[in-house]
Length: 183
Length: 178
Image 1 (cartoon, one colour):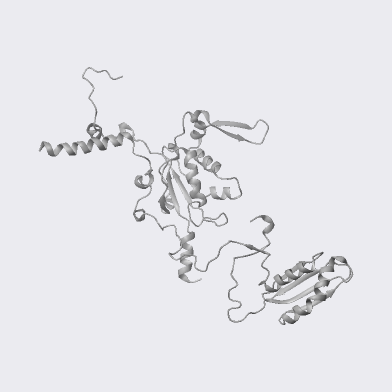
Image 2: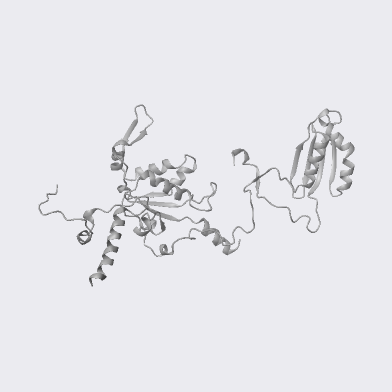
């Protein structure tokens, strides 16, 4: 996370599975199209209003559509959602087909998804089946009763055997083998 | 949050106190090990933004072993800020003045220099000898394994064992040991 993301709303990845299992509730509540009647920057939005807006409104009776003409200002779409999110999107110089696609995005998304910082790229309701880790998992139970510091737990136990030690063990083995023959 | 979950959370994020015996250890090698425990890098829950570092207690820092002739060669630089205020202290001089300083500086240098470093260093306790205050000792639940094997001196091994140790040959009677 960099400093520029400090004020970004943070959240987790989620699957919008609940919505649409029984019935679909459109999360988009209100959409305001702000545009200029004369400027070229609003051309695409004006085309959208002329050709597609009536169909859009009749297909989505749950969405309130406002039109706000304003002189010599760039076109903007503001969408408001059931969870209180408000998405502001600039439509300056966007073509008709681009705007159709962006408005489809605004209609189908659940709240302001694009401007959340994902804390993690994975999420689960059941983080662990075997129980979460604690400092005492995989620990030698002998440590519970040991008096620390202790040579047994402090010495390095991964070093290879030294040649001296190997010779000593060979010698001990030899003496063990020899002894029964003498008796 | 249920009582069980709260206890679970507490257990997962509890700080463990580790003890590390510096006897015969290279401070610069062992700093890399101590660093991992101080920052919590040894835990599967590690994340730079969660506070999961542990406490490390170092004992016997007086008995550290530097490589080669580093006691004479390594210099520690300090500048007071005034003109002519630069000093270079050799490792053996520094160790005579403060036997905890070399291991402390080694751990400090092993960590990346960020805002967290000084707070992480607060969790490192260093004692020159074997004596630890009781309130520190009662928290210790784990020991960090040393890197090097601590050699045993011949005159510290009991006489019986030395006699029993297998020999390839005996010196002749008239052999003169230097």
